[in-house]
Length: 128
Image (cartoon, rainbow, N blue to C red; front, side, top):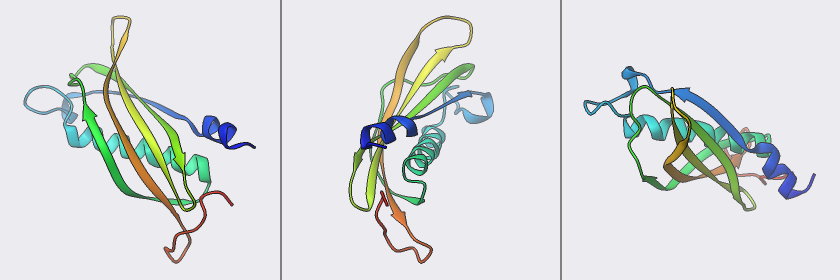
């Protein structure tokens, strides 16, 4: 499998509903909850790409472009954007969809870096 095919095959998309128990006093999704969901999708993407033990080492930048209201559906999409020797970078985007209307908007995007490790927690090659 080529690198491009592997990247495409590991692309991950997850949908979630934004319920009141995940929102703040402005009735929008907590930023920390959004970051948690993004890290989870990034982890799944990195693991699907490498099929190895992957750990988050950094979140380089997370831009909150639009608040995410309660009562909406969000789609999180993770895609590998860079592959190094022992690390890789995953971009995650969160899109908002209204439950009862067409259309979607980009709300948040960010980059996460992961390192492949062995059973002794030592870095190993991402691609064997």
